[in-house]
Image 1: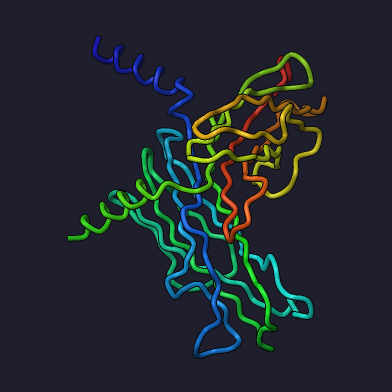
Image 2: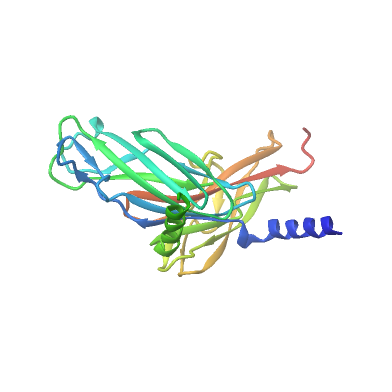
Length: 147
Length: 132
């Protein structure tokens, strides 16, 4: 009887749409600043990182959070965007768990998140341009997917 | 000792109240179809303060490129704070295939930010009577 009740509860849980859910929310947009020591580097590491909150209620096996390769999204006219290198690093934490890659890299990353986790993801971006930066606005873009 | 900062981080995250977010439910589903078209009803939600417009995009199963021969009845939807709405995603399964899996991603339409938050799911349709 207990097993039957447990299976019924599990079936109901699996069938409840409200529990099959994952959300990705941007809490704090990041800001890129010119490094005070290196005029060829823009970064958000000086306390201006993007903060993303991922809430996972997706399934009993958890879900996967994927960070895409960052790209340069906007730049001023005349800037050689093709020569710029865009990299990112992240630090994620949730109750009784964490994941982080402290070194900057250009490629996509992913990590697994357990069920019923509220994940705080801090994302730093860095843009390096050997020829320096022209005056103007620069921004990067990273897609963060919960799947 | 390590639990305190983690709890603090989780609490801060919960209290932070994301300015932009979306939810998708279910994130995985499978079903059969007697025809060459399969549809799934998905619920898109906006659980946070502020109205938002979301794009609902049929993608490949790896969420990299748009999926061909796939449609959404409301490819762009505006949701009030805390509300949700159902959309129907349909895609064609070629006669030569017994099943097809597509991805669907939901993302904000107009979000000027360094981060593009997406929620993605995968959906598999199989043709009834197709031999294995």
